[in-house]
Structures are given as C-alpha cells and as structure tokens.
Length: 287
Image (cartoon, rainbow, N blue to C red; front, side, top):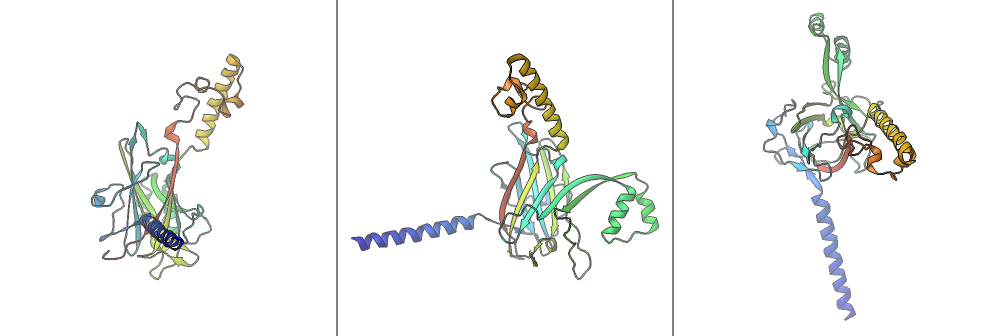
C-alpha cells in the first residue's frame, strides 16, 4: 500500500513538473519573422496579420517582429473606461529594457523620446552619427529653423555604439501617431545594439524585454504637490486636518479637491505610470 502511495506521489510530482514546464514555455512569446523590412512611420498598415498581444495591467496592445538585422515592436494605445492607456507618454517617452541573462535590468536599454532641435543641432547630430553632409545639404537643412527628432538614447550613457563590419549601425529609432481613440507607436532596434556581456542577440535567441511609460514629470509633480498643499490649508481651516494628514491618506476625498482629476487633490489617472516585462524568442527565417 505504501509502495503504491509512493508511486502515486512520484507520478503526481512528474505531472506537476511537466505542467510547470508547459506553463513556463507558454510564457515565452514568439516573435514573428519579418519577410520584408518594416517601415517605421507610426502607422500600423504592415502589422495587419501580426499576432497582437495585450498586457493585462495596462491594457496596452503590442506585437513583435524581427529579421536578421532588426527587432520591430508595435504598440497600440486605446482608451479604456474613458482613460487613455497612453498616459503621459508624450512627456515621458518610453523606456525599453532588455536582458540576455533573463534578469530584469532597468539600467540596460533605451529611452525613446521626441524632442525639438535647431537646424545646427540636427546637423551636429547627423555628423556625430557618421553621416557626411555637404555644404549644400547643410544649407538645405538650415532652411527650416527647427526639427522634431525621434531618438533611442541608451540608458547607460557610457555604452559605446556597436562596431559592425559595414560601419556604424543604424541607431534605435521610433515613430508615432498620437490620437485620442487610437495611438500607434513603432520601434526599430538593431539587433547589434541588443548586446550584453559580449553576447549579441540573434535570430532564434531568447530575450527579456521590459517597457515603461507615463507617470508625472518634475513639473507635474510640483503642481500636484502645490494643489495638495492648498487643499491641506483649506482643510486645516475647516476641520483642523493638515497637509500631512492628507498625505497619510487619513483625510476624505473632499479635502483633496473632491473628485480629483487634473484640478483635484488626487493624482490624475491619466498620469499613471505603466511598466511590464515579457520573455520572447526571436524568430528565425522561415519560422
């Protein structure tokens, strides 16, 4: 009887291990092979047949593709229950973290941001990236006073640009189309930039990715704290409750500006910060 019980326990343990392995395998998201280079233009026409995934917490939709040179990422932001999942992306940009050792490194990756630069700043940036500009081309650039540029800045400023046989690699870049009901963001990251401890990501290899966007910047936080201080002063005069009481969560909503929102005492839900991590398997040609 004891022997039968022992066999039963071993069999159950074997099933449990198999189930655990199956669950772990299901968590790895396969990237799709890009038969042709994806045009990164902030539109999603080339993603119509892509496998769209949804992050449960943020409700952001995304898809992944790669070829032997680039990793392409698509993000779709919609409005959920009246609140844009986009959050404050336009002010915060998006951070994309990566790891080749399956750990969550938040200091390895890129900060994708938009910024306005002058014509001379653009010229300097292009030349620093290795592009040769003729005087005629520089004069053409200077016909416009400012430009909007889309940058993928390494989170570690000391990270050198990768060296490849054909010369400098294209830097990470992105484009977006921001609308209230549907916003589209496309990223392109050269695989040669996805390197860690001498290992470079390649088709067929595993990769951990993290994404972070939204939240309040310093200016928004200062404005929020000022509203909280003002609400606290009013509440102190009315009920004897101070600013510290509201920060501890002991005051009721009326002391924090009633319904909250951009003019209330509570943080605007549109300023929420989002982040999540996924494990992916880079596709190989023909997969």
